[in-house]
Amino acid sequence: MHINRNKKIIYIFIILVIITVMFIFFNFILKKEVTASSNGIDNFPDSYKPYLEELAKKHPNWTFVALYTNLDWEYVTENETEFGKNLVPINYSDSWKNTTPGQYNVEIDSGWVDSSVQAVEYCMDPRNFLNEVRIFQFETLSYDSNTNNLNSIEKILYGTEFYEQKVSYLDSNRKYDKYE
Image 1 (cartoon, rainbow, N blue to C red):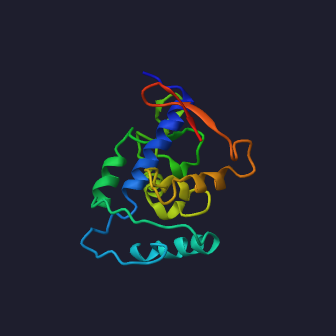
Image 2: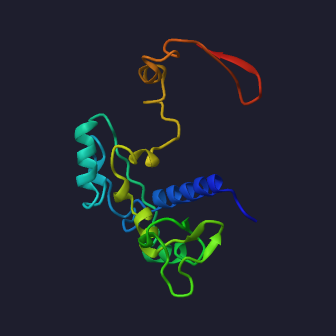
């Protein structure tokens, strides 16, 4: 079955995001006591702190929360680098492609080849994405009453046509409702 190029790109991106989140702290087990800090940086491995501290300087209201997965880095990279499991476009740099003899530039799907171990490891290492653009792939999307409130929403909407407006929507039971 062939998947069109856009769907495949989205599929690969979603998989890499999930994998990356799963391994944020692959070599830290919950036995490490969580310490209190105003922005949460103290709970991260030392190698993450310079990136997070730089972000905290620019965004002092941000809070960083460590996620411990208890997963083994070696085990996961071994499984994620199986031939044909993670793909890159054939026109990518050779450093992103599997260069194993007999597998190099073998199209797994139209225009797609197997990715290199280095590419998979790069994408799985969260430190490569701790910047102002990429950090949001780690954002917690669950409800938080401290931040998900009318005041916070209005701050986000300020300057848009939706600021201080009533919104109509269908609820989960498909009933028309109005947000005031």
